Length: 427
Ligand code: HSE
Image (cartoon, rainbow, N blue to C red; front, top):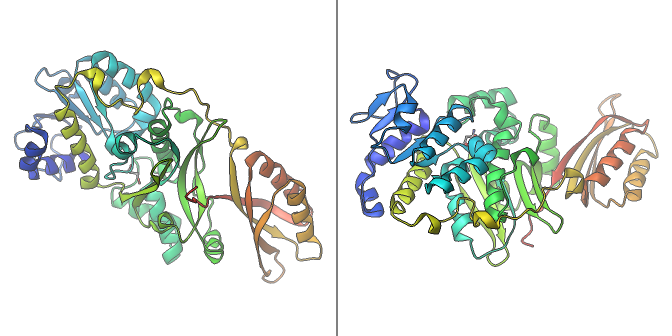
């Protein structure tokens, strides 16, 4: 009964008539569990029995569907499993829960013949689960890339547009209710990794493997990087990227340079967007609010309508939780980062003397890494010059070795800043 719970009550009440017309019957909230019954809320709770005992709700024989909007994977997991054991359907917005415990939860749900719907867990109000799982069912999905954390996107946008300070923008996202309870989940990419894990599973038909997702946050991105990227025609976005290759699945969240002419590069503020490339349809782009009370409630209520419509459908013939039949999931491995192929932005501090650039380009050349662009910023006073390079695609393992060799040069000071680059071409 927090932000999303309150939004769900409001949307269900406001659109009750339309919902009956869509679902064929009404959806009534009868019980709600809340930590503090007397707390001020954004919704009217008239007609809802409030309790501080969530177990009482999940075991109430009158309740058919449980909506879990607690978050985290402690109490929420316990309650969802208890609800399933009691034969109740579940609607949840909890990405951490699904990404980390979804395999177990879906297996229990299948045994009991109940549904677990989780549209609101990924990209808030954008119906991306529905789109990938059902709308694109004809396709072999080749890759998908998403801006799936509004808080991180808000921070990067404000850094670029207003030169704002990281901490100030984060505080604003917290005030607006977008940030996670622990905001490091937003800025370190954990929240995006939860969501990407779910998307990859329904796109490729693989079990949920959150632990294998590579996750790098945005805390090391400087205003200078944002500006240099811009000079070279790119925007830096915190991107979740999942790609199917012959050898395995790339599953990675990290800051990424994207050509500024791509639509997704222009998704700003707290908005989310997911680009999905299917073999038949080509690239498709989904855009909308990824957080907030009513956008997230929009997805929760859509799941409630879906579950309500299918209450009477034979459990064996419902849309599978992970899009593919549970006994037909693939064991394609998640690739280690060393085996991932991508292009790079490199920023380094170099002594301003003859031959330095030649040394750097020789190391890259010897490693088979081709350079796409070079930008040199003149030193201010006695300081080093800044060199920025864009490279063509190369295996990350090869780039790791080249970076280590360049950092070992006497003329290069400090660590090299590396940001991955994706052109997100149609092919
Ligand atoms: N903290 C998340 C975000 C909320 O900023 O996108 C929605 O999952």
